[in-house]
Image (cartoon, one colour):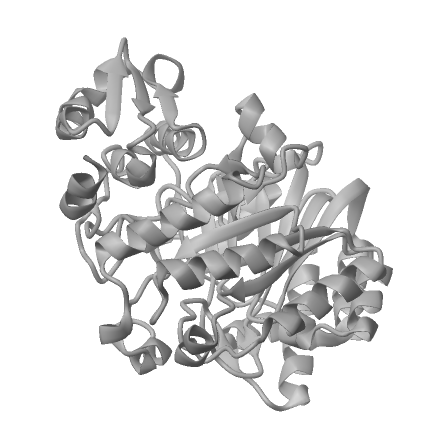
Length: 445
C-alpha cells in the first residue's frame, strides 16, 4: 500500500508549511510603513523570539537552497554586521517599549563568520534596546568545518547554549557530489570542543535525496551520528530546483534518487533513530525522550515556524538581516533578499522591508488547522474553525481518505500512521493559495 501511495502522491509539489500563507504569497502591498505600524502593536508583555540572518559562507555548497552568498573579504562581513546593528536600532525606535527577548536564533549562511567579537557586538546592540528574559535559549547554526576550540569557547562566553551542526551526509562520494567535504572526524571534533566548552545542547542536521545516496550510505551516516549522541536530529529532503538556484545546476540530476528511493531513505533514517530510542517529532525531526521538543510533542504544544519544528510558544518573531522574515500581530514582513538593497536601506535609516502579507481571520483559522496537522497529525475543525466553512476541503480530502492517508470523523481530521509521510498533502487541502507548480515547491516526499 505504501509503495502505491508513493507512486501516486510522492512527486506532487507542496509547501513545507513553515508558515501560512507561505512566503510565496507575500507581496509588495505590505512594506516598511506597515512593518513599522505592526511593530508598534507588539504587546510589551509578550516575550518575542529573534532571528538573526547572516547570508554569507566562505564557499557555497551545491545543494543549498538558502539565501546565501560566498564571501572572501572580511570588510564585507564587517559592513553586514554593522547593518544588523543599524537595523536593531531602527526596530527599537519602532516599538513602544523594549522587546522582551525569550529566544535568539542565528541562521544563515554561516553566522560564525562574524567571529565571536562580531557576534558579541550584535548581541550588545540588542541588549542596549531590549530585555533578555531569564534562561532564554540562544541558538546558532554552525558549519562543523569552521568550529575549533577558540570559537566554541567564544560562543559559550556569549551565552549561546544550543548549536545546530550541518552534517547533511557523511559518505565521501555524496560529499564530493554536493560540494561539502567534511569527514566524520571533523564533525566529531566540532561536537567534542562544543561540549568541552559547556555547550551541551546539540542538534545535527541531515539530508536525504542527495546525489549518489543509497539506503546503505544513509544507514552508515545515521550510525555515525548516533555515536555522537545528539539531543536532536533533523533530516530534510533535498529539494532540487536548479531553475531557481544556480549552484544546484552543478549537481548531476541523473545521480539523484527517484521518488520511491527517496521515500525508502527517509524510512531508513526514521528507523535508525526511533530504533535507538529517539522520538519521532512531526515530519522530519527526532529528539531524545527528555528533550523539550519531545515533551512539546507529547503535550500537544509543538509549534512550527520558519526554523522548522519548535517548542517555542511565542506568538511573535522579529527577524533581522537580509531576507529575514518577521511574524507580527498583523501578519508577515520580509526584508529585501538582495544584500546590497538591504544594506542601503538600513544605512540610510530605513527599514529594509521588501514585501509581506496582512493576515485575515480566515488565514489565521487555516493556519491553525495546517499547523495542527503538521505538528500533531490531527485537527479538530470544531475547535480551530467553523466546520461548515470547510465543506469543499472535506470533499477534497476524500481521495486521501480512500487511500488510507486520512480519516475524518465528526469534523476531526487525523492522519493515519501510514499517511504521516504525506501530511503536507492533507495540509495543502486547506491552503487557499495552493497551486501545483513544481517550480515553487518541493516534492511531497
